Length: 347
Image 1 (cartoon, helix red, strand yellow):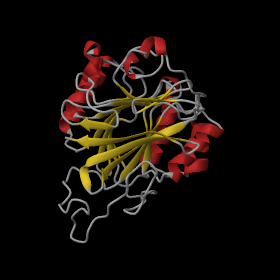
Image 2: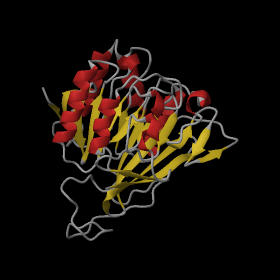
Image 3: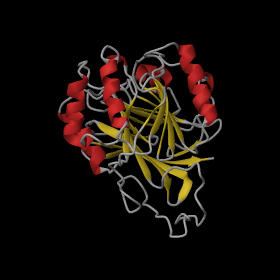
Image 4: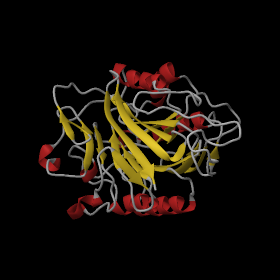
């Protein structure tokens, strides 16, 4: 049965004057309903202007996890999508209590099931459903966090348990169907698990290329967790074809999405641990834009040295500078360092 929210107020809305490190500023909406930067009415399928979404995965509990929550507040994120593996303790009450101690009980939180969440999933899902009920204007249909399709503030996102819970075929069918039925300008495909070629460590292929190809065909951004590091590709046009570098094209710092074009990102530094870059597996791959691990940092194609890796979050801001087709992304760690920064254009 579809799950939708009731008429409770949303808790975070920085408004048109919000600013954050890693973005190029904001634009308000004029009194006649046109957007400030373009002078044209925003399309019906656009996101809210300057919508800021955080993505984190592989949280654990403790000081680093709390610091990541505090980062979400300091950046004035409008909501967060948790990419699975919540507390590694099968204790939904403890996980929710720690989160609420920083974010409060009504900050907009969505989540996808991780492999360390399966034994106590009904408890975690109940916590997510309770939060969903407090998010005004949010709508999620399907099995929340497992096989669900959500919309909030004009952004569409699929929360998929592919590789963790349920059959591959059912997930592939669901992803293809909900993406085909949705007409929002911006869409995300979110998973906990990933494919080896699309993460920085040694995790195996746990998703399916068929599912990710549906995301690419739709022009949906692919976001994953599972590997405890940060890794972002360039624009991809042939996901699953390793021999052609998955169709990687364009600059590291400028990405394009749209029918047949996407990029993928792993944001797995939510607080649990930080893993190494596996150079033996990934050293000759040319599709990377930026990578941030315990022992290797590549920032938009340039290797950085003399750093100490920290936990952090990926932030995506949509509808920037008055342009509904423009977005910006950045990864910031809990020390306040901007680790990655890039532009996205929807074509």
